[in-house]
Image: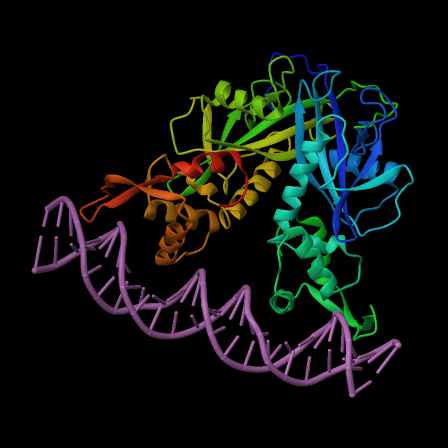
Length: 225
Length: 225
DNA sequence: TCAATAGTGTCTATAAGACACTATGCC
DNA sequence: GGCATAGTGTCTTATAGACACTATTGA
Protein backbone atom coordinates (compact mmCIF):
# COMPACT_ATOMS: atom_id res chain seq x y z
CA UNK A 1 0.00 0.00 0.00
CA UNK A 2 2.76 2.43 -0.84
CA UNK A 3 1.12 5.08 -3.00
CA UNK A 4 1.81 5.71 -6.64
CA UNK A 5 1.30 8.96 -8.46
CA UNK A 6 -2.15 7.68 -9.40
CA UNK A 7 -5.37 9.49 -8.63
CA UNK A 8 -6.72 7.88 -5.49
CA UNK A 9 -10.24 7.37 -6.88
CA UNK A 10 -10.01 6.15 -10.43
CA UNK A 11 -12.98 5.03 -12.47
CA UNK A 12 -13.68 1.46 -11.49
CA UNK A 13 -16.56 -0.50 -10.05
CA UNK A 14 -16.21 -2.42 -6.80
CA UNK A 15 -18.78 -5.11 -6.17
CA UNK A 16 -19.42 -8.36 -4.34
CA UNK A 17 -21.03 -11.49 -5.75
CA UNK A 18 -22.31 -14.48 -3.86
CA UNK A 19 -22.26 -18.07 -5.08
CA UNK A 20 -24.90 -19.72 -2.92
CA UNK A 21 -24.66 -23.49 -3.21
CA UNK A 22 -27.11 -26.09 -2.02
CA UNK A 23 -28.03 -29.67 -2.80
CA UNK A 24 -31.36 -30.46 -4.46
CA UNK A 25 -32.14 -34.06 -5.29
CA UNK A 26 -28.51 -35.07 -5.08
CA UNK A 27 -27.32 -32.32 -7.38
CA UNK A 28 -25.20 -29.34 -6.44
CA UNK A 29 -27.15 -26.20 -7.36
CA UNK A 30 -26.39 -22.49 -7.46
CA UNK A 31 -28.81 -19.63 -6.80
CA UNK A 32 -29.24 -17.21 -9.70
CA UNK A 33 -31.39 -14.12 -10.32
CA UNK A 34 -32.49 -12.34 -13.44
CA UNK A 35 -30.87 -8.95 -13.98
CA UNK A 36 -33.37 -6.09 -14.04
CA UNK A 37 -31.03 -3.51 -15.60
CA UNK A 38 -28.55 -3.14 -18.43
CA UNK A 39 -26.01 -4.48 -19.11
CA UNK A 40 -27.19 -8.05 -19.59
CA UNK A 41 -30.77 -7.03 -18.72
CA UNK A 42 -32.90 -10.14 -18.33
CA UNK A 43 -29.93 -12.50 -18.17
CA UNK A 44 -29.31 -14.83 -15.27
CA UNK A 45 -26.59 -13.66 -12.90
CA UNK A 46 -25.14 -14.26 -9.47
CA UNK A 47 -26.75 -12.21 -6.72
CA UNK A 48 -24.45 -9.30 -5.99
CA UNK A 49 -24.09 -5.57 -5.90
CA UNK A 50 -21.91 -2.59 -5.22
CA UNK A 51 -20.13 -2.33 -1.93
CA UNK A 52 -21.75 0.43 0.12
CA UNK A 53 -18.89 2.11 1.88
CA UNK A 54 -21.28 3.95 4.20
CA UNK A 55 -22.72 0.76 5.65
CA UNK A 56 -20.51 -2.21 4.80
CA UNK A 57 -17.70 -2.82 7.26
CA UNK A 58 -15.94 -5.13 4.84
CA UNK A 59 -16.43 -6.94 1.57
CA UNK A 60 -17.70 -9.93 3.51
CA UNK A 61 -20.26 -7.75 5.30
CA UNK A 62 -21.44 -6.56 1.90
CA UNK A 63 -21.83 -10.18 0.78
CA UNK A 64 -23.79 -10.95 3.92
CA UNK A 65 -26.05 -7.97 3.24
CA UNK A 66 -26.62 -9.18 -0.33
CA UNK A 67 -27.53 -12.63 0.99
CA UNK A 68 -30.10 -11.15 3.34
CA UNK A 69 -31.53 -8.50 1.01
CA UNK A 70 -31.69 -10.48 -2.20
CA UNK A 71 -31.97 -14.08 -1.06
CA UNK A 72 -33.49 -13.68 2.40
CA UNK A 73 -30.91 -16.15 3.66
CA UNK A 74 -28.80 -16.06 6.80
CA UNK A 75 -26.06 -18.48 5.87
CA UNK A 76 -24.29 -20.56 8.48
CA UNK A 77 -21.24 -20.53 6.26
CA UNK A 78 -19.91 -17.67 4.15
CA UNK A 79 -16.35 -17.58 2.89
CA UNK A 80 -14.47 -15.25 0.60
CA UNK A 81 -13.42 -17.07 -2.54
CA UNK A 82 -11.29 -14.47 -4.28
CA UNK A 83 -11.64 -11.74 -6.82
CA UNK A 84 -12.32 -11.38 -10.49
CA UNK A 85 -11.21 -8.18 -12.12
CA UNK A 86 -10.24 -6.51 -15.35
CA UNK A 87 -11.21 -4.02 -18.04
CA UNK A 88 -13.45 -6.32 -20.06
CA UNK A 89 -15.57 -8.40 -17.70
CA UNK A 90 -18.09 -5.54 -17.41
CA UNK A 91 -18.81 -3.63 -20.64
CA UNK A 92 -19.01 -0.38 -18.65
CA UNK A 93 -15.33 -0.48 -17.78
CA UNK A 94 -12.75 -1.75 -15.31
CA UNK A 95 -14.35 -3.64 -12.45
CA UNK A 96 -13.43 -5.82 -9.53
CA UNK A 97 -15.78 -8.15 -7.74
CA UNK A 98 -15.04 -9.97 -4.50
CA UNK A 99 -16.61 -13.38 -4.90
CA UNK A 100 -17.96 -15.20 -1.85
CA UNK A 101 -19.59 -18.55 -1.48
CA UNK A 102 -22.27 -19.68 0.92
CA UNK A 103 -23.30 -23.23 1.72
CA UNK A 104 -26.84 -23.82 2.94
CA UNK A 105 -29.29 -26.61 3.45
CA UNK A 106 -31.89 -26.86 0.69
CA UNK A 107 -34.61 -24.37 1.58
CA UNK A 108 -37.27 -22.08 0.17
CA UNK A 109 -35.66 -18.97 -1.25
CA UNK A 110 -37.01 -15.61 -2.35
CA UNK A 111 -39.29 -16.16 -5.38
CA UNK A 112 -36.98 -14.06 -7.57
CA UNK A 113 -34.25 -16.63 -7.10
CA UNK A 114 -33.95 -19.87 -9.00
CA UNK A 115 -31.66 -22.80 -8.35
CA UNK A 116 -29.76 -24.31 -11.27
CA UNK A 117 -27.66 -27.48 -11.22
CA UNK A 118 -24.06 -26.39 -11.60
CA UNK A 119 -23.69 -28.90 -14.43
CA UNK A 120 -26.50 -27.27 -16.44
CA UNK A 121 -26.17 -23.53 -16.23
CA UNK A 122 -28.07 -21.14 -18.48
CA UNK A 123 -26.33 -18.29 -20.31
CA UNK A 124 -24.97 -15.98 -17.65
CA UNK A 125 -24.10 -12.30 -17.37
CA UNK A 126 -20.51 -11.07 -17.11
CA UNK A 127 -17.95 -13.78 -16.29
CA UNK A 128 -20.30 -15.46 -13.84
CA UNK A 129 -20.17 -18.87 -15.51
CA UNK A 130 -16.41 -19.04 -15.13
CA UNK A 131 -16.64 -17.80 -11.53
CA UNK A 132 -19.15 -20.50 -10.63
CA UNK A 133 -16.91 -23.13 -12.21
CA UNK A 134 -13.94 -22.02 -10.14
CA UNK A 135 -15.95 -21.88 -6.91
CA UNK A 136 -17.46 -25.32 -7.46
CA UNK A 137 -14.02 -26.75 -8.10
CA UNK A 138 -12.75 -25.26 -4.85
CA UNK A 139 -15.71 -26.42 -2.79
CA UNK A 140 -15.50 -29.96 -4.15
CA UNK A 141 -11.80 -29.99 -3.52
CA UNK A 142 -12.25 -28.82 0.05
CA UNK A 143 -14.64 -31.68 0.64
CA UNK A 144 -11.71 -34.06 0.35
CA UNK A 145 -9.90 -32.67 3.37
CA UNK A 146 -12.38 -30.67 5.43
CA UNK A 147 -15.75 -30.87 7.08
CA UNK A 148 -17.14 -28.05 4.95
CA UNK A 149 -19.91 -30.23 3.48
CA UNK A 150 -21.74 -30.37 6.82
CA UNK A 151 -23.12 -26.91 5.98
CA UNK A 152 -25.00 -28.41 3.05
CA UNK A 153 -26.94 -30.46 5.59
CA UNK A 154 -29.18 -28.90 8.18
CA UNK A 155 -28.22 -28.50 11.84
CA UNK A 156 -29.03 -32.18 12.41
CA UNK A 157 -28.40 -34.97 9.93
CA UNK A 158 -27.70 -38.68 9.71
CA UNK A 159 -24.40 -40.27 8.77
CA UNK A 160 -25.84 -41.81 5.57
CA UNK A 161 -27.10 -38.34 4.55
CA UNK A 162 -23.72 -36.73 5.14
CA UNK A 163 -22.09 -39.64 3.34
CA UNK A 164 -24.28 -39.00 0.29
CA UNK A 165 -23.29 -35.31 0.35
CA UNK A 166 -19.61 -36.21 0.28
CA UNK A 167 -20.16 -38.70 -2.53
CA UNK A 168 -21.98 -36.07 -4.57
CA UNK A 169 -19.26 -33.45 -4.11
CA UNK A 170 -16.34 -35.80 -4.64
CA UNK A 171 -18.16 -37.66 -7.39
CA UNK A 172 -16.85 -41.01 -6.27
CA UNK A 173 -17.93 -43.90 -4.09
CA UNK A 174 -16.75 -43.73 -0.49
CA UNK A 175 -16.89 -46.90 1.62
CA UNK A 176 -19.53 -46.17 4.24
CA UNK A 177 -17.80 -48.16 6.97
CA UNK A 178 -14.57 -46.19 6.50
CA UNK A 179 -16.56 -42.98 6.44
CA UNK A 180 -18.13 -43.82 9.82
CA UNK A 181 -14.74 -44.67 11.30
CA UNK A 182 -13.29 -41.39 10.13
CA UNK A 183 -16.21 -39.37 11.50
CA UNK A 184 -15.93 -41.18 14.82
CA UNK A 185 -12.20 -40.70 15.24
CA UNK A 186 -12.29 -37.03 14.25
CA UNK A 187 -14.83 -36.40 16.96
CA UNK A 188 -16.38 -33.38 15.24
CA UNK A 189 -19.86 -34.86 15.29
CA UNK A 190 -21.93 -35.97 18.23
CA UNK A 191 -25.15 -37.97 18.29
CA UNK A 192 -28.21 -36.01 19.32
CA UNK A 193 -29.31 -38.06 22.34
CA UNK A 194 -32.29 -40.23 21.58
CA UNK A 195 -33.11 -38.63 18.22
CA UNK A 196 -33.43 -40.69 15.07
CA UNK A 197 -34.69 -40.09 11.56
CA UNK A 198 -37.06 -42.52 9.91
CA UNK A 199 -36.79 -42.68 6.14
CA UNK A 200 -38.91 -45.73 5.26
CA UNK A 201 -40.00 -49.03 6.63
CA UNK A 202 -36.62 -49.95 8.01
CA UNK A 203 -34.24 -49.14 10.81
CA UNK A 204 -34.07 -45.38 11.44
CA UNK A 205 -30.69 -43.61 11.51
CA UNK A 206 -29.35 -41.67 14.46
CA UNK A 207 -29.23 -37.91 14.11
CA UNK A 208 -25.92 -36.13 14.54
CA UNK A 209 -24.83 -32.50 14.90
CA UNK A 210 -21.50 -30.67 14.93
CA UNK A 211 -20.05 -30.96 18.43
CA UNK A 212 -20.15 -27.70 20.34
CA UNK A 213 -16.37 -27.43 20.59
CA UNK A 214 -16.10 -27.44 16.79
CA UNK A 215 -18.98 -25.14 15.91
CA UNK A 216 -17.02 -21.93 16.06
CA UNK A 217 -13.90 -23.41 14.49
CA UNK A 218 -15.87 -24.69 11.55
CA UNK A 219 -17.71 -21.50 10.74
CA UNK A 220 -14.85 -19.11 11.43
CA UNK A 221 -11.88 -21.05 10.15
CA UNK A 222 -11.51 -21.95 6.57
CA UNK A 223 -9.13 -24.73 7.56
CA UNK A 224 -9.48 -28.44 7.80
CA UNK A 225 -10.84 -30.33 10.79
CA UNK B 1 -23.44 -7.88 -9.77
CA UNK B 2 -27.05 -6.70 -9.93
CA UNK B 3 -26.88 -2.95 -9.41
CA UNK B 4 -28.15 -1.06 -6.43
CA UNK B 5 -29.20 2.56 -6.42
CA UNK B 6 -25.69 3.42 -5.31
CA UNK B 7 -23.40 5.79 -7.14
CA UNK B 8 -21.20 3.57 -9.27
CA UNK B 9 -17.95 5.22 -8.19
CA UNK B 10 -18.03 5.86 -4.46
CA UNK B 11 -15.10 7.11 -2.44
CA UNK B 12 -12.88 4.14 -1.72
CA UNK B 13 -9.31 3.11 -2.39
CA UNK B 14 -8.52 -0.04 -4.36
CA UNK B 15 -5.01 -1.39 -3.96
CA UNK B 16 -2.90 -4.53 -4.16
CA UNK B 17 -0.31 -5.69 -1.65
CA UNK B 18 2.29 -8.39 -2.10
CA UNK B 19 3.59 -10.67 0.63
CA UNK B 20 6.87 -11.89 -0.80
CA UNK B 21 8.19 -14.82 1.21
CA UNK B 22 11.60 -16.41 1.10
CA UNK B 23 13.83 -18.49 3.34
CA UNK B 24 17.00 -16.98 4.81
CA UNK B 25 19.10 -19.12 7.10
CA UNK B 26 16.26 -21.50 7.78
CA UNK B 27 13.78 -18.77 8.67
CA UNK B 28 10.73 -17.72 6.69
CA UNK B 29 11.10 -14.03 5.85
CA UNK B 30 8.88 -11.38 4.33
CA UNK B 31 9.97 -8.42 2.17
CA UNK B 32 9.07 -5.01 3.58
CA UNK B 33 9.68 -1.42 2.47
CA UNK B 34 9.60 1.89 4.32
CA UNK B 35 6.69 4.13 3.42
CA UNK B 36 7.78 7.43 1.90
CA UNK B 37 4.43 9.22 2.33
CA UNK B 38 1.72 9.79 4.92
CA UNK B 39 -0.09 7.99 6.41
CA UNK B 40 2.42 5.90 8.33
CA UNK B 41 5.32 7.78 6.71
CA UNK B 42 8.57 6.02 7.56
CA UNK B 43 6.85 2.86 8.82
CA UNK B 44 7.56 -0.55 7.40
CA UNK B 45 4.86 -1.84 5.06
CA UNK B 46 4.16 -4.48 2.45
CA UNK B 47 5.06 -3.46 -1.07
CA UNK B 48 1.87 -2.46 -2.81
CA UNK B 49 0.01 0.31 -4.55
CA UNK B 50 -3.11 1.45 -6.27
CA UNK B 51 -4.48 -0.58 -9.12
CA UNK B 52 -3.92 1.33 -12.36
CA UNK B 53 -7.04 0.68 -14.39
CA UNK B 54 -5.37 2.03 -17.52
CA UNK B 55 -2.61 -0.54 -17.50
CA UNK B 56 -3.48 -3.40 -15.15
CA UNK B 57 -5.51 -6.16 -16.75
CA UNK B 58 -6.42 -7.61 -13.37
CA UNK B 59 -5.57 -7.34 -9.70
CA UNK B 60 -2.98 -10.06 -10.19
CA UNK B 61 -1.39 -8.12 -13.05
CA UNK B 62 -1.15 -5.13 -10.71
CA UNK B 63 0.55 -7.30 -8.11
CA UNK B 64 2.99 -8.53 -10.73
CA UNK B 65 3.73 -4.95 -11.74
CA UNK B 66 4.37 -4.04 -8.09
CA UNK B 67 6.76 -6.99 -7.78
CA UNK B 68 8.71 -5.85 -10.80
CA UNK B 69 8.68 -2.11 -10.12
CA UNK B 70 9.30 -2.13 -6.38
CA UNK B 71 11.17 -5.37 -5.76
CA UNK B 72 12.73 -6.01 -9.16
CA UNK B 73 11.53 -9.60 -8.87
CA UNK B 74 9.93 -11.83 -11.46
CA UNK B 75 8.35 -14.44 -9.27
CA UNK B 76 7.89 -18.01 -10.40
CA UNK B 77 4.87 -18.23 -8.13
CA UNK B 78 2.28 -15.55 -7.45
CA UNK B 79 -1.13 -16.35 -6.03
CA UNK B 80 -4.03 -14.26 -4.87
CA UNK B 81 -4.55 -14.67 -1.16
CA UNK B 82 -7.74 -12.72 -0.59
CA UNK B 83 -8.82 -9.25 0.38
CA UNK B 84 -8.75 -7.02 3.40
CA UNK B 85 -11.24 -4.19 3.49
CA UNK B 86 -13.16 -1.78 5.68
CA UNK B 87 -13.56 1.80 6.82
CA UNK B 88 -10.79 1.84 9.43
CA UNK B 89 -7.77 -0.02 8.06
CA UNK B 90 -6.64 3.15 6.24
CA UNK B 91 -7.12 6.44 8.13
CA UNK B 92 -8.05 8.17 4.87
CA UNK B 93 -11.26 6.17 4.52
CA UNK B 94 -12.81 2.97 3.20
CA UNK B 95 -10.28 0.84 1.37
CA UNK B 96 -9.91 -2.60 -0.11
CA UNK B 97 -6.63 -4.30 -0.86
CA UNK B 98 -6.23 -7.51 -2.83
CA UNK B 99 -3.44 -9.39 -1.09
CA UNK B 100 -1.14 -11.66 -3.09
CA UNK B 101 1.76 -13.80 -2.05
CA UNK B 102 4.89 -14.69 -3.94
CA UNK B 103 7.38 -17.43 -3.13
CA UNK B 104 10.95 -17.01 -4.28
CA UNK B 105 14.38 -18.43 -3.70
CA UNK B 106 16.54 -16.29 -1.43
CA UNK B 107 18.08 -13.61 -3.66
CA UNK B 108 19.39 -10.08 -3.74
CA UNK B 109 16.50 -7.63 -3.76
CA UNK B 110 16.21 -3.94 -4.47
CA UNK B 111 18.18 -2.02 -1.79
CA UNK B 112 14.99 -0.32 -0.57
CA UNK B 113 13.65 -3.68 0.49
CA UNK B 114 14.49 -5.49 3.68
CA UNK B 115 13.70 -9.05 4.69
CA UNK B 116 12.28 -9.67 8.16
CA UNK B 117 11.70 -13.06 9.80
CA UNK B 118 7.94 -13.50 10.01
CA UNK B 119 8.33 -14.33 13.69
CA UNK B 120 9.99 -11.00 14.43
CA UNK B 121 8.19 -8.26 12.55
CA UNK B 122 8.70 -4.57 13.24
CA UNK B 123 5.75 -2.20 13.75
CA UNK B 124 3.85 -2.15 10.47
CA UNK B 125 1.58 0.26 8.63
CA UNK B 126 -2.15 -0.37 8.22
CA UNK B 127 -3.26 -3.93 9.01
CA UNK B 128 -0.20 -5.41 7.38
CA UNK B 129 0.91 -7.39 10.42
CA UNK B 130 -2.38 -9.23 10.54
CA UNK B 131 -2.30 -9.81 6.78
CA UNK B 132 1.18 -11.34 6.97
CA UNK B 133 0.06 -13.59 9.79
CA UNK B 134 -2.86 -14.91 7.76
CA UNK B 135 -0.74 -15.43 4.64
CA UNK B 136 1.97 -17.28 6.55
CA UNK B 137 -0.64 -19.52 8.13
CA UNK B 138 -2.05 -20.36 4.70
CA UNK B 139 1.34 -21.01 3.11
CA UNK B 140 2.46 -23.27 5.96
CA UNK B 141 -0.83 -25.09 5.81
CA UNK B 142 -0.50 -25.61 2.08
CA UNK B 143 2.90 -27.16 2.61
CA UNK B 144 1.19 -30.11 4.28
CA UNK B 145 -0.67 -31.13 1.14
CA UNK B 146 0.99 -29.50 -1.85
CA UNK B 147 4.29 -29.00 -3.55
CA UNK B 148 4.16 -25.24 -3.11
CA UNK B 149 7.39 -25.15 -1.09
CA UNK B 150 9.48 -26.03 -4.17
CA UNK B 151 9.20 -22.38 -5.15
CA UNK B 152 11.22 -21.43 -2.08
CA UNK B 153 14.08 -23.42 -3.57
CA UNK B 154 15.79 -22.48 -6.77
CA UNK B 155 15.16 -24.23 -10.07
CA UNK B 156 17.46 -27.07 -8.98
CA UNK B 157 17.75 -28.37 -5.44
CA UNK B 158 18.63 -31.48 -3.48
CA UNK B 159 16.18 -33.67 -1.57
CA UNK B 160 17.77 -32.83 1.80
CA UNK B 161 17.38 -29.13 0.98
CA UNK B 162 13.71 -29.49 0.07
CA UNK B 163 13.23 -31.63 3.14
CA UNK B 164 14.62 -28.83 5.31
CA UNK B 165 12.21 -26.35 3.67
CA UNK B 166 9.24 -28.55 4.51
CA UNK B 167 10.44 -28.99 8.08
CA UNK B 168 10.80 -25.24 8.48
CA UNK B 169 7.31 -24.49 7.16
CA UNK B 170 5.58 -27.31 9.00
CA UNK B 171 7.67 -26.75 12.11
CA UNK B 172 7.99 -30.46 12.77
CA UNK B 173 10.38 -33.29 12.08
CA UNK B 174 9.62 -35.29 8.94
CA UNK B 175 11.28 -38.70 8.53
CA UNK B 176 13.66 -38.25 5.62
CA UNK B 177 13.18 -41.78 4.30
CA UNK B 178 9.40 -41.33 4.13
CA UNK B 179 9.90 -37.95 2.51
CA UNK B 180 12.02 -39.51 -0.24
CA UNK B 181 9.48 -42.28 -0.82
CA UNK B 182 6.69 -39.72 -1.14
CA UNK B 183 8.66 -37.57 -3.56
CA UNK B 184 9.50 -40.62 -5.63
CA UNK B 185 5.96 -41.98 -5.84
CA UNK B 186 4.45 -38.58 -6.67
CA UNK B 187 6.81 -38.29 -9.61
CA UNK B 188 6.81 -34.50 -9.64
CA UNK B 189 10.55 -34.26 -9.35
CA UNK B 190 13.22 -35.63 -11.65
CA UNK B 191 16.94 -35.90 -11.11
CA UNK B 192 19.04 -33.59 -13.24
CA UNK B 193 21.21 -36.13 -15.07
CA UNK B 194 24.72 -36.24 -13.70
CA UNK B 195 24.44 -33.13 -11.55
CA UNK B 196 25.22 -33.16 -7.85
CA UNK B 197 25.76 -30.60 -5.14
CA UNK B 198 28.71 -30.77 -2.81
CA UNK B 199 28.13 -29.32 0.66
CA UNK B 200 31.17 -30.50 2.58
CA UNK B 201 33.71 -33.24 2.75
CA UNK B 202 31.15 -35.98 2.30
CA UNK B 203 28.97 -37.58 -0.32
CA UNK B 204 27.32 -34.96 -2.56
CA UNK B 205 23.54 -34.98 -3.07
CA UNK B 206 21.86 -35.36 -6.45
CA UNK B 207 20.18 -32.28 -7.86
CA UNK B 208 16.49 -32.43 -8.73
CA UNK B 209 14.06 -30.18 -10.61
CA UNK B 210 10.31 -30.11 -11.13
CA UNK B 211 9.50 -32.54 -13.94
CA UNK B 212 8.46 -30.83 -17.13
CA UNK B 213 4.96 -32.29 -17.07
CA UNK B 214 4.28 -30.65 -13.71
CA UNK B 215 5.86 -27.26 -14.27
CA UNK B 216 2.78 -25.60 -15.68
CA UNK B 217 0.39 -27.31 -13.29
CA UNK B 218 2.37 -26.16 -10.31
CA UNK B 219 2.67 -22.53 -11.27
CA UNK B 220 -0.83 -22.13 -12.65
CA UNK B 221 -2.89 -24.26 -10.33
CA UNK B 222 -3.23 -23.51 -6.70
CA UNK B 223 -4.16 -27.13 -6.06
CA UNK B 224 -2.32 -30.03 -4.57
CA UNK B 225 -0.08 -32.42 -6.47
C1' DT C 1 -40.99 -63.03 9.38
C1' DC C 2 -39.45 -60.34 5.50
C1' DA C 3 -37.55 -56.38 3.20
C1' DA C 4 -34.60 -52.73 3.53
C1' DT C 5 -31.35 -49.85 5.41
C1' DA C 6 -28.44 -48.72 9.88
C1' DG C 7 -24.54 -49.84 12.10
C1' DT C 8 -20.40 -53.07 13.83
C1' DG C 9 -16.53 -56.23 13.69
C1' DT C 10 -12.76 -58.46 11.37
C1' DC C 11 -9.63 -59.52 7.81
C1' DT C 12 -6.62 -57.76 4.34
C1' DA C 13 -3.94 -54.45 1.67
C1' DT C 14 -1.53 -50.27 1.58
C1' DA C 15 1.16 -46.53 3.28
C1' DA C 16 3.85 -44.30 6.85
C1' DG C 17 7.40 -44.37 10.68
C1' DA C 18 11.67 -46.56 12.72
C1' DC C 19 16.02 -47.70 11.90
C1' DA C 20 19.74 -50.45 10.33
C1' DC C 21 22.51 -50.68 6.46
C1' DT C 22 25.13 -49.36 2.28
C1' DA C 23 27.18 -45.54 -0.80
C1' DT C 24 30.25 -41.82 -1.84
C1' DG C 25 32.57 -37.73 -1.40
C1' DC C 26 36.82 -35.28 1.01
C1' DC C 27 40.39 -35.49 4.22
C1' DG D 1 40.49 -45.80 6.41
C1' DG D 2 37.62 -42.36 8.91
C1' DC D 3 34.12 -39.00 9.01
C1' DA D 4 29.95 -37.05 7.58
C1' DT D 5 26.04 -36.96 5.02
C1' DA D 6 23.36 -39.24 0.89
C1' DG D 7 20.50 -42.72 -0.17
C1' DT D 8 18.30 -47.76 0.23
C1' DG D 9 16.06 -51.82 2.23
C1' DT D 10 13.29 -54.01 5.69
C1' DC D 11 10.56 -54.50 9.70
C1' DT D 12 6.83 -52.74 12.32
C1' DT D 13 2.75 -50.03 13.06
C1' DA D 14 -1.23 -47.32 11.71
C1' DT D 15 -4.89 -46.66 8.55
C1' DA D 16 -8.19 -47.46 4.75
C1' DG D 17 -10.95 -50.75 1.88
C1' DA D 18 -13.62 -55.18 1.57
C1' DC D 19 -17.17 -57.49 3.27
C1' DA D 20 -19.62 -60.42 6.32
C1' DC D 21 -22.46 -59.98 10.16
C1' DT D 22 -25.83 -58.05 13.48
C1' DA D 23 -29.61 -54.44 14.61
C1' DT D 24 -33.97 -52.21 14.08
C1' DT D 25 -37.84 -50.49 11.97
C1' DG D 26 -42.69 -50.94 9.24
C1' DA D 27 -45.43 -53.85 6.73
